Image (cartoon, rainbow, N blue to C red):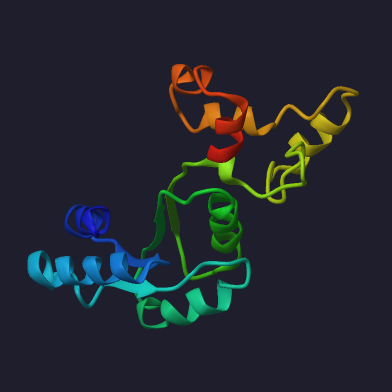
Length: 169
């Protein structure tokens, strides 16, 4: 909806590009910006774009008119599943941005192999990957573990049937 970008613009003079994959939410953010913070229009851009690992050039092009500004932030709220890891990789590829702000969630929606003992984009650290591979035990990053890291209440999951756990995953 644009609350964070408005705060960062008004209080810290950030220039922001907000990418949103959902067209309705994207339009809501633009409408809110025009109504409540129109002075941010030249420096805060809301763009409808579904982010993938191939989005770096699109993001760089979108930031082109902000290049002469000293600080540009790329932020993501509720980047479910793989999107947190993808956002970090894109941030590292894009030279335009000085800041990355993400509020991750829904780790249990990350993509992986059929039994979710390995994930496509996690862990990102080679050191952590190597440390995990040295153990003869099962990978510690199971879907259940990732649910807990998503800060859900354990009680919420303890009362679910196995079928419901799979459904939620």
